[in-house]
Amino acid sequence: MYYYNSWSTAHKKPFGAIRVGQMMEVLFDSDKPHVEVKFIIRRDFGKRYEFSMERTAIGKFRVLVPFDVGRGLYFYYFEISEPSDWGKIRHYYGSTGIGGEGILYGNEHDVKPYQLTVYDGEDVSPKWYREAIFYQIFPDRFHNGNEDGHINHPKPNSFIYGTKADTPFYVKEENGDLARWDFFGGNLQGIIKKIPYLKELGVTALYLNPIFSAISNHRYDTSDYLEIDSMLGTLDDFKELLKKAHESDMHVILDGVFSHVGKNSRYFNINGDYGDREGAAKNPDSPYFQWFKFENYPLEYKSWWGIKDLPEIDKENTSFQNFIYGQEDSVLAKWNKLGIDGWRLDVADELPDHFIRGIRENLAHYPEKVLIGEIWEDASNKISYGARRNYILGEGLQGCMNYPFRDLIINFLIGKRSSQETAQRFMSLYENYPHSIFYGNLNNLGTHDTERILTMVGSRNNLLAIAMLFSLPGVPCIYYGDEVALTGGKDPDNRKYFPWEKPRDEVFQTYQVWSKKRVKEQVLIQGDFSMFFTPTLLGILRYTEQDVYVQLINSNEENFTLNFKEITFLQPLDFLSLLEQSLKDIEIPGKSQINLILSR
Image 1 (tube, rainbow, N blue to C red):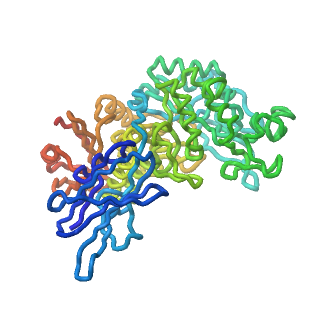
Image 2: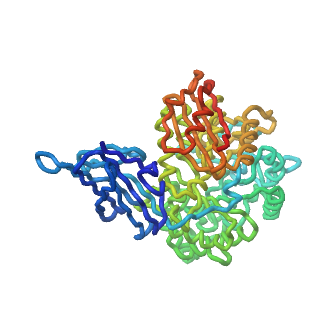
């Protein structure tokens, strides 16, 4: 018998990611006599190292490994030498690709190693952020706060929808380019006037999609980083929003789009709106010229994902770096001094690690501001542009938009992933991320870039998804309109105007209940985390020394009576007797969840 489980402290201490300079203890089980075991570890894209494991007792091999050679990813497995009549036979023990319990391999080249994340130190986000309930607003589609309903400064060559109930629709040229940008007219005054509504919902923090001057309705094509888009209002409107939000104990973070700008921005200015000699595309002597890479000046240039509307910026350019995050007269300096509470970085994996560190150095002067990034995959092992990204290993991001959680929730609820695989993949992410990052991730069921959660999973599953959103580690974020059961497929259908006349139904009430529960139960904010499953149910555990929170999710149509003996726990727990007593023969109706708070 050979056995190792990376999720069990009986085999690896500490659990999960470790700090630079920390010692890792590894124990490997084998009941076979006369075997030798080596611990094999490889630094990411680096050398392979061997550590002989010491037999400490019958069936146990042990090694201590000091990780004092720098942060990054390391990959490990075990080499087993077993005597036979034909000499020594080598076996290899590695991961299944998820973590936890491993499997035996006959060939070293076939081994899937375990991942070990080594980080600089706990990069804890501000307390207000960790305890927050976020609400994401796409400003044009939220609310028009003008008393007479007029729209501020309509943009040239655009159109305004006839009614707020119209479905968003892109009008395109024959070649697929957009012919006109479409607007509903939401603005900053609209957000201000709905602060009482957001408080009623339980929201304590706002994440705003871009609000800086731009041509499009989504404003990811920045025209001027230092100006509020005139359709949204004025700088005074924004100051009022910050003031009213803070008076209501609500925080505000902005969207930082620093990978690219709009082709008609003051920095590129291809159509000459800012003058015949302003901008890189009009003047090779422009101070912005070195920000861009022209292939055939001025009409052929490097653009973001090949979209010509979005000239890509060279983030290695020191002038651009100083413009974005320099201590004086930079973009960050202006908005930080006004009192915003943090930044969400668009396409963070397309910003160099040192660029993100530069932003964090700027924010170091404001310890209560948070920095999170848009990353769609497991951020601990992301490779972008041929390089492993280290932005969650210290002095970088303090959390990521948690798209992997969203995918797991949806695929479990619609039956594309079993309860076992779902539980294991949640634990794999927990193992891979530094603890503070895992708890600092911004959890979402949908964003402006995804289909609406209700459209993805249906009405009954939607209530389960909300329960999971608030039960899992991380900071829950509600996408505007999800709380009133807005539907929508891919962009632009997922960006409808908020239906303010629609009555608040069960979905709104469910968000309210969970918002209050998260505020009341500290175990949902700071409690440790584990998962369990049966062939039918998925279980979430959050626990402290005082309390244990248990959530049982039945995504099937049929009612289910729990047999405790059928439960598989992914980690050893010291309160199993409490769980057995509390969960004995409990019945979970179809398409429902049950949650309990147990005192230890």
